[in-house]
Length: 80
Image (cartoon, rainbow, N blue to C red; front, side):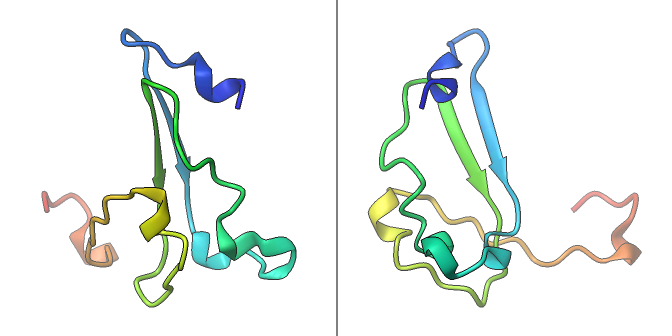
């Protein structure tokens, strides 16, 4: 939690966690209980996961879900 408190209005902190769907089920990795329930001011967490994976913890985390279609190589250089 100490690092999460380092964000400021002038320099917000953004933590990006990619591929939550690839977390191991052992040690409650997919339960997401290791994520803090609330974040300090000026701190945001962005996570990614395959759309098929559902996490029971998402509703409790006060999250905004943004679904993005899969990027493929043919989109390279094109604005979405």
